[in-house]
Length: 204
Image (tube, rainbow, N blue to C red):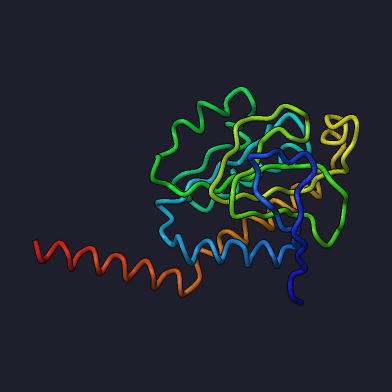
């Protein structure tokens, strides 16, 4: 089954955020595969997984960060052990190498569609929109997981999110990321870069 997509502005999106597509997990896999085809070198990818371990819904990002650490990604900011929350956000982002491609991941609130729980964009997201505490935009690419309904009490919606669903969504995203950078075309591209680098060194 192909992915279903719909371009839209996410709830709470500010002027610094990108136009997002609402997609299912197949759309997420396609999104990361496209990124991997352009940026195949894992060493130059930085994931910033925003959120906290103190809120069920807002743990979506840290769960993914923890799983990516398990995949041995070299640059992951935001895990269950060391969350990238509002207090640590600016300092954590400042430590990311300037040359790296940043992929920002966060939870958000919105209309629940069981088949399409993700928002992806070739551009930044604004962390904290769901709770009204907007932080500086972040990401060359971004993904948000819709963990609960938009509400006048956003903290309540985030806290009441299903841990089972949040962990399941995080696992799907982490698996899609791991698969995208394991594709034969990506490995071949990295091999070509490595060969070209050494060929140039031989000419010096």
